[in-house]
Image (cartoon, rainbow, N blue to C red; front, top):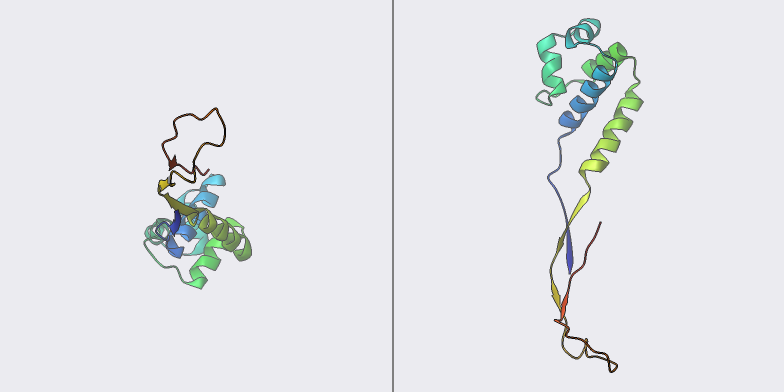
Length: 121
């Protein structure tokens, strides 16, 4: 019997910071450049990127402007990352079948243990 659980939920600020950092690095820009354009300190932007600070909507908008990305695009990317983090974890148990359920039906019966293992990809 499979029991579906989900791993720990990531914080929104962590995913938001990861996407901002990824986009900044894709552009080959430094923290100092983006922070200057967004009118925030380098230390603050670094903490936002590391998910240590909850950025206000004004700060997020300023960083998006600095990176030249739309807020909707940023949030869509965060949503995709959240979906990846929410992939279910399946806990699988070995199921025991009764001998009657696995009784051989023909002359070519081999030794059957009665264990059923379910593999999932």
